[in-house]
Image (spheres, rainbow, N blue to C red):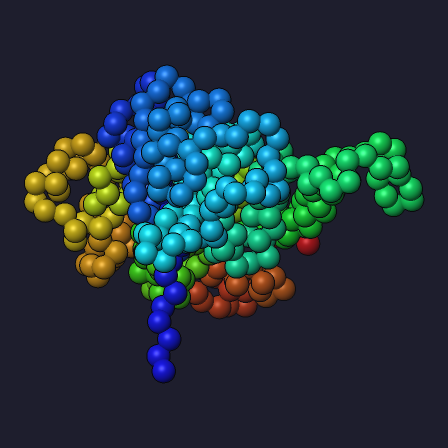
Length: 451
C-alpha cells in the first residue's frame, strides 16, 4: 500500500513596515522570508503586516494585529500577565502541536510564526505565549538553513558557533528546584543558578569549537597561500543568484546546483576548463542575504577570505528577480565589510534566458558595464571564459630563462605559473621562453638564484 506524503508544517509570516521603508520593500522582504521558510520545508499559509513607528517592545505588533495573528495559529492573541507556566490552567484549551486543531472538522492552523525582524528574547517568548506557536525570527530561520546544509567539518563548526552565540542570550530558566544550589568539584559555583550554569556551558563549548575551527582555518590559510602564485576568480553574490551554476559551467565540476537558498555553504575551488597555463582557479563562495546574522558573517569570515583574496571578483546577480537592486546593495555592503570591495569586480547579470527584450534594455541602461548572460547558454559560458582568460593575460610579458640541469625543479614551476612558449635543451641546461606576469618571472629568476 502506497504511503501518503506527510503534510508540511504550516507557517504564518509577520512583518512590520518601519519608518524609512516602504510597503513594497516589506512585501519583497516577506517574499524572501517565505522562500527561506520553503527551504526549511514549511508551507506558508498567510502573512500579517502592520505599519508602526517601531517594533512593539512586548510582542512586535499591537494588540489588534496580535489577535489577527493568533487567528492563524489558534492562540489567545493575548500575552498572559506574570511568569509563563509550564502547563496551561485547567479548563483552558492548549494549542495542539504543529498547529493541528483539536476538532477534526476545524481547519489546520499554522504551527510556526516567522518574523521578518530580529527579536529580543522577551518578544519571542511573548509572541509564543500569545499565539501558541513556535516563533522564529529571521536570524533563527537562516541559522536553521545553514545548519541543515552544512556538509564539511569547517562549515558545521562555523554554523554551530553562530547558533550557540545566537541562543546564549535566549536561554531560559527551567525551574524545577534548580534555582540556586551550592557548588562542588566540577559543579556549579556557590549560588550559581541553573541558567548561569547553562550559559557557562555554552561559552565553554563555543571556546572549544573556536579552537578546533582555528586549526582548520590555519590549514585553509596555508592552501590559500599556496594558491597566491596562481590566478584566482571568486564568484560572489546573493544567495540563489546562480553562482554554483556558473561554477559548474566554467569548471566542469560536480558542485551542487539547487533552486533553494543557501544550497552552497562550503567554498569550492576548481580550475577553469579547458585548463590554461598557468591555471586559473575559480572559487564558489557562500551566498549573501539581507539581514545576514553578524555571528554568521564572523564565523564564515575565513571562508569568505576567498572573495577578499581573489584577483578578480565576478558579482553574480539574478537579473530575473524583482528585488535585484536591493540584492546588489546587500552584496556590496557585505563585500565592503569583508574588505573585498577594492579589487577588480565585474557584474554578471545572470538568468538572461528568463528576460524579455524590454527588461534586457532596461538593465543594459541601468548597468551599462555589466554582462547580461545565462549559465545555460554554452555561448555565454564560452564568452565569459574568454574574457576571464584575457583579463589575466593583459599584463603578461615574454622572457627567456636558462634553467641549469641542477635546478630542473624550476622548469616545473615555470609550467605551473606561466605559459611556456618554447623549451629547448643544450649543454648548459633547459632554455625556456615564457609568457607571464612580471611578478611570476621575477619569482622564477629568484628561484634560480637560491640554493
